[in-house]
Length: 248
Image (cartoon, rainbow, N blue to C red; front, side):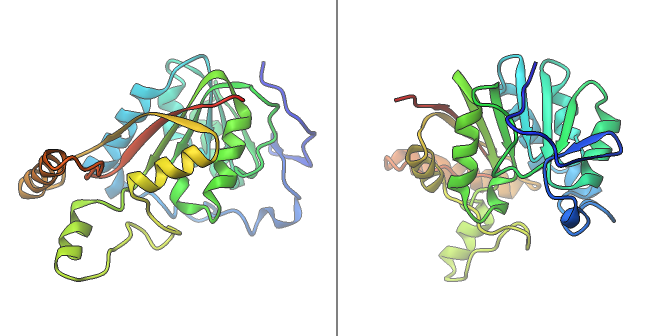
């Protein structure tokens, strides 16, 4: 059974809230609609690849979906794992709780999750990494929660998407996938952050399929070219990173 390292500051609609109740409404990004994921993105090659890669890399019984949103990924994970979900939005947690009644969801801050140390076999950061101002704070929180042989699974948009590489070759600035993103990272930057925060990278997978055949051919061609010259760069979008905590 998953244990908490503190008491909730309140209960709303049967949901434990590990934040001051005053600003709950202000933090409720999902009150009107999902600001991050639309019906169009749900059908995209990008989104389908993201779910597939995360599900393939998630191991163990106890899984934490950190930044669980409306619970769609939690629902898929719950088919094989015991899922705990956390999100800062009370509306998102209500929807997740309704969608996945067998999972347990709380309202809290992903940078300071209320769980005891070494509680989870896998911590999933599904498209939250690019939204936070301090990725190291998030990584260190995940590190504390993982068991000795646990794994961290990160899904995040790649700065090396083929659209951006085309723009760079034309001397134009890169474009982020969303105005909500603080930034988007190259695979080298994510690997450096993981190492700095006490993780050892196991693998990094990327999706090279695009919405058009020309885009897909270009992505594969760029990746082959990078490998031929010995570059560590991985193109495509998104990228899923798998890492294990290093224990001193």
